[in-house]
Amino acid sequence: MIRALRLVLDAAGRRAGLLGAHARLRAAHVAALSVFATAGAVFLLTLATVALARWLGLMPALGIMAGLCALGCAVVLVLMRGEARAHAAALAAQRRDEAQLLQAAALAAVPPLRRGGGLAAAALSALALGLLAGVRARRPRAAPPEGHPPRRRRR
Image (cartoon, rainbow, N blue to C red; front, side, top):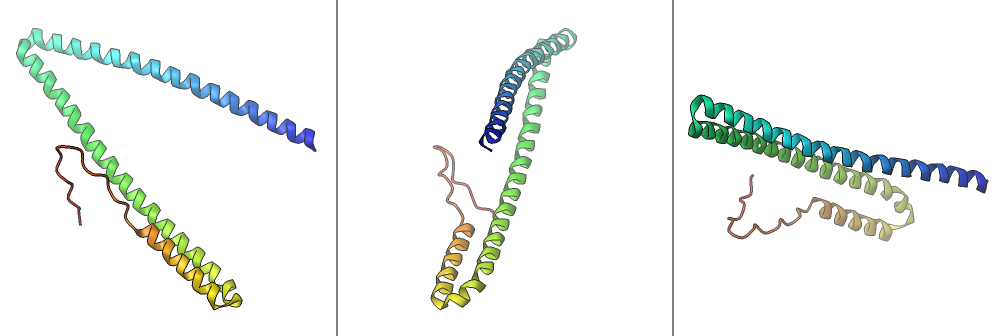
């Protein structure tokens, strides 16, 4: 029995080592790919700027490229705001599910305690209410950084 357990644990250890080595190599390849992709993007932007400069002149070409970069920043900011809203909605749903799970667990534990006595049921009820209050309480937010006005709460 112990030999079989040792074989299973050795196989699991080898598998975990193989997965770790694969993850390290994958991360190195992704890092190299991102470096080359960034260099390619810089060269493409340079090529576009030079082509616009030959066609329209230097200042209009630089203005167009700056405007395109600002447009790209605006698109990324809109995407980040949408992701933050989706994250907040998922977090609220998770908190709601946790509260329902705690309620169900508290209700499931009450019937056996009724047979044990009123004191045990009262203690469990107080504990369940405390847990539910703790889950539903809002966590305090961090103070805003220096120079930024405090955030207004949305209703």
